[in-house]
Image (tube, rainbow, N blue to C red; front, side):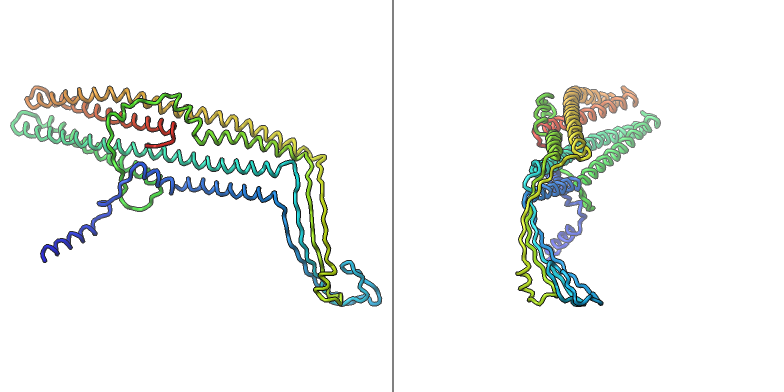
Length: 447
C-alpha cells in the first residue's frame, strides 16, 4: 500500500510539473518544415499564387462564347386612351387599347470573339507566366526563411557553447577566489589582491547572465519566425559539432555561383519578367489588328393587349437572329503606340532587374565564401592559440599557488585563455554557418 501511495504521488508530481520540464526540442529540419507550413509571409505568397491561378482560368474561359439570358416586364397605365384609332405595340397593330396593359420580353443572346489579333491567347500565356512568377515569389520567400532559420540556429548553438565556456571560466574564478581567501587567512595575500579575484568572479557571473540573455533572444527570434505564440519553453536540439565540420573543403566561389544561377527562384523570376514584357508588346501591337466576332440571339415577347394565349404569343413572336461584326481600328489617339513603347520600356527594366539580381547573388555568395575562408583560417589559428593559452594558464596557476607570480599576471593569463576559447568557438561556428550557406545556394538544401 505504501508503494502504491508513493507511485501515485510521483505521478501527480510529474503531472503538476512545469511544462518546460518536458519542453519540445526542435531540430533544424523540424524548424524549417514548421516554418514552411506556418509562416504568415509565406502563406500570403501562396495566396497570391492561388489568385494568379484564377486569372489563368478566367483568361482560358474568355476563349469560349458568352451566353446570357434576359427578360423584362413592364406595366403601363394610360388613363385617357384615344378611341377609334390604331396603335402599334411590339410590332403589332392594336385596334383597341386598354387603359392598363402589360408587355413582357424574353431573350437569349450569345457572343463569341473569333479573332482579336491573338490577344486572348497571349493573355493566357501572360497569366500563366504570372502564376509561375507568383510560385517563384513564394519559393524566394521560403529560401529567405530557411536562411534566417539556419543563421539563428547556428547562433543558438554558438551561444550555448559560449555559456559552457563562461561557466568553466567561472569555476576557475571561484577556485582562484577560494585560494586567494586561504592566502589572505595565512597572510600570504593582501585583501586588495583578493578583491581583484572577487571582481573577476563577479565579472564571469555577469558574462554568463549576458550570454544566457543573448541565447534567449536568439530563441525568441527563431520562435517568432516559426509563428509560435504560446508560452511554452522553446528549445532546440544541440547536435554534435566537430572540428572536421569546420575544416571541410570549402566549395569554390564560381561553382556555387554558377549553380545558383540555374536554381535560385529570384533569378528565374527576373528571367520570366523579360518574357512577360515580350508578350505585353505582342498584345499591345495586336490593338492595331481587326477584331472579328459572332453574335446569335433568340427573342420573343408577350402583351396583355393580345387575345392570344401566353403560350401562343411566345411561339408566334419567337425570332432567331445571327450575325457577325468586324471592328477595324483606324485612329486610336496613339494608345497602341504608347502601349508598345511602355512594354518595350518594361522589357528594359526587367533586363536591368535581372542584372541587378545576378550582381546581388554573386555578392551574397562571395560574402559567404570569403567569410568561410577567413573564419576557417581563424579557426585553425585559434585552436593553436587555445592550446597554448591553456598550457600557459595551467603553468601560471601552479606558479600562483607557489607565490611566484602576482595576481595581475594570473589574471592576464586567464583573460588570454578565455579570449582564445571564445575566438575558437566563434570562428568554428561561423565557418560551419558559411559553408552551410554555400551548400544551400548550390543545391537548395539546408543542413
